[in-house]
Image (cartoon, rainbow, N blue to C red; front, top):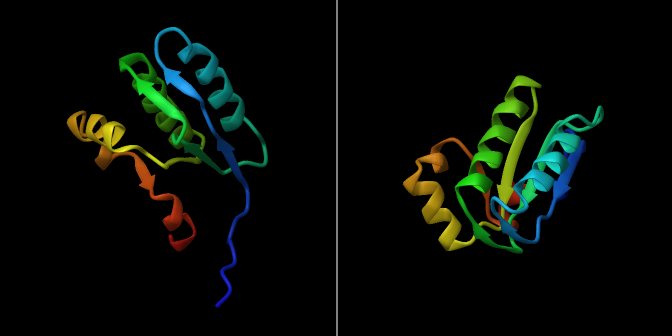
Amino acid sequence: MQTILDNPKITIICPNGSLDAANSRNFEQELNLALNRVNSTLVLINLEKVDFLDNTGLMVLVSGVRKAKQLGQRVCFSSVSPAHKIIFELAQLDKVFEIFDAGKICNR
């Protein structure tokens, strides 16, 4: 069976290391650039290589999701570690964020 993407206008961001007060501004700029791309309708943030996430980094993710909604776009997350899933659950963001396992992205 062949899977065909309805809209291949996807931008993927793969942050590395920490999303914290020290570097969240750089990530926020990268995310805003991705959201402002004319041809992108979905931004996928792959968190596989993020080893630390603090409140500042979390707020950048929330702001990105809000901005995407205002622009008629989507921000989704993949490869979220169990530790980061717990943070999302405690903040009740797991109900707001679209989170995919890496293998399930194409099954949506």
